[in-house]
Length: 112
Length: 394
Image (cartoon, rainbow over all chains, first blue to last red; front, side, top):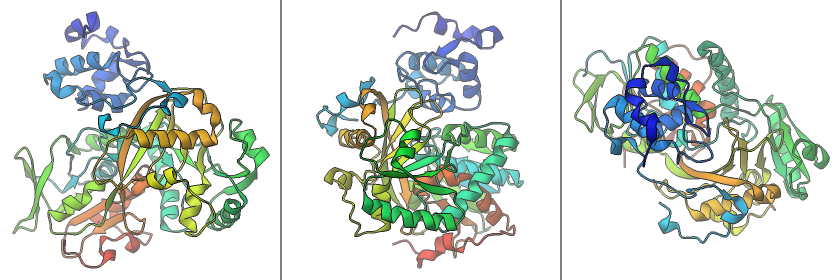
C-alpha cells in the first residue's frame, strides 16, 4: 500500500515538533506526536499503539492509518513490519447496519 | 537479569498492572511479565463498567464501593481523568414476574447502602426515549460508573514505571521454581529469568497454568464474552442499560422468566454501554469454549437480536467491530486473592470474571498490603486461594 509523504518523511520528522500535530488517525484524531510518545513508552505494535492511543479504533477501523502507523513504529524501533502489523482481521471488516448483519449466514469457520 | 527484584508479577492485564503500581508505590522493585502485547487479554476486550447493580449484597459489592473511591483518588494523584464517567445505569424489566424479583433485590441492595430505585415505564422512557414499548419498569442507580480500561492500564504502567516498575511483553513464563535460597526463579521463553522472594499470579483466565508450574490447583475457568461495537453516534439515552432477565434467572433458578433457546445457548444478557470513544459496546455472551477467543457469527447475531429487542431503532446504526475476552470465572463468583498455603511468597490475584476493571484498584491495593504485611482493615479471608481445600494440583 502506498502511504505517501507522511511516511516518507517520518524518519526525519520524528523529532520535529511542528509535525507532532499532524493527524495520523483521522477518525479518532490521533496525532503523530501522540503515536511517537506511545512508541517511546514501549507500545511497539499496531495493536499496542491502537489500545494506547485509540488510533485505528474509529469508523474505518484502521484501514486508512494502520499501515502508516506500522511504518512509523518500524522506523522508530527498527522492528520489521511483519512483527508490527496485526496478524488477523475479524468480521465485520467494514461497518454494517445492525439489521443487515442479522441476515449474514452463520459460517463461523470462516470467521477467523 | 536476576538481581534486585522483590516481586515478579505474571500477567500484565489490568490486575497485574494495578498490583505492580501499588507494590512499586510501597517501595518494592517490581517486574511485570506478559506473554502478549498491551491489553491483549480480557482487559482489552471488555466494557468499562464500575457496575454496582448486578451485585448481590456481600464482599463484591463492598469491594466495588472501595474500588470506586480508590479510582477517584487515583484520578487526582495521576492528574488524569482516565475518561471516568458517571452516567448511571438502568436494569430493564419486561414483566410482572421480573418486577417482583427485582423489587426484592433492590430492597436488599438499598439496605447495603446502594443508591438504587425502581422507576416506572414513563420515567424509564424519559431517560431512554428509544426503549421498546414492552419494557414495563426499570431500576435506576446514579452510582454505576465507568472508566476506560486502556487509559487505566496505561496510567498504572506510566506511574509504576516512574517508580521503577519494569514491564516485559511478548515473553511467556515457562517455569517457576523454588530455589534453596527461598527465592522463586521465574524462567521465560526467551531464556531470561528473574529471581524474587515474591511471585504474583495475575494471569486471569490463564492463572491455572501458572499455578500448575508450582503444583497448585487454581480453580479458574475461562468464560468467553463477545462484545459488538457500534459506530460513533450521539448519546441515545441518559444511562447505560442492562436487562433484568438474566439477573433474575441467576437470583431464582426456577424463575418464571424464560430465556430463549439462543439466549440459553450463548449465555446472552444485555449490557449496553457508551464507551469513552462515543461508540456503544453491546454485549455479551457467556460461553464455555476453553481458550478459544474467536468471535462468532452466531454470537454477533445473538447480541444484535438481543439489543434490538430492547432498542429497535438501533437497527439503523452500524457495527464496526466485534471482540471477545476470556473472563476468569471462579466456583463461587469471588476473586482469588492471597498467598497460597505451603508456597511462601507465591500469591494469586485473579478470577475477577466480569469485574476486573471495577475491582482492579482495590485488588492491587489489597495485594500490596498482603505482600508488605501491612495491617488490612477489612477481612479478606473469604478471597483466600486456600478456601477451596486441597492445594495440590490434580
